[in-house]
Amino acid sequence: MDLLVTIKPYISGIIEVSLIWFIVYKTLDFLNKTKAKAIINGILVFILIGFVSKFFKLEVISWFFDVIINYSVLILILIFREEIRDILLHLGSFRVLSKRKLKTKQYAHELKELIEAINIMSEEKIGALIVLERRVPLDVYIGTGIQFNTSISKDRLIGIFNKNSSFHDGAVIIRGLKIVAVGCVLPIGPLPPDLPNDRISKRLGTRHRAGYGISRETDAISIIVSEETGKISLSMDFYFNYDVDLEVVEDVIKDYFEQFSR
Image (cartoon, rainbow, N blue to C red; front, top):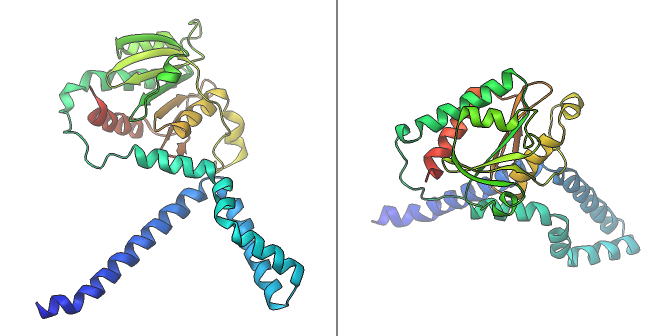
């Protein structure tokens, strides 16, 4: 008992340091994937200038620095309002205790049909945008298209995204094991700032921007097939992955069905 009392402060200290390190690491990792990285560099330069002005007693610059520091919390909230919104959105959709996972056989047919459709569209360079709804409802975006309530079918998906279809430019939204809407209009935003090079950026058009946009505005997963190259992209949880293997997509969809099939 005495030993436990003795080591308890050390255990508490280790837990605190570990949690702080984890929070800081995850926050920096997230900010590194957004435009905030450049803003943070600017803030660090500003702080350096402030310390230099204090050291050399530059009164005007020191006064300006003090004013900024006094309103720093409000300024940071204004600067990082989009990033704060994204963090809160995804924290709110985090499932601490997920429902009992369904057996694979309960969604095996839908998984097979969806993967085969994506594979065929990739091989034949049929542009596609498929969105999987998670915790955040997509009713607003469903309302922009034609509402369905039909099972996931390889032939149906290929038909929807066929160039002769009037829905091929829009998105398909899947809720659980059902296609709930086609021809949907999604928010179009800037491409992720951490793409490997400009050549990739030039290949990504409206479809990719919409896929990335919906995954930023909500917690949805978007799967994009390029009409130009046939390459598959995956966007979810702040990440945009260009040219991913079909096996990776299958793992993501399988995990989605395990959590959200209904």
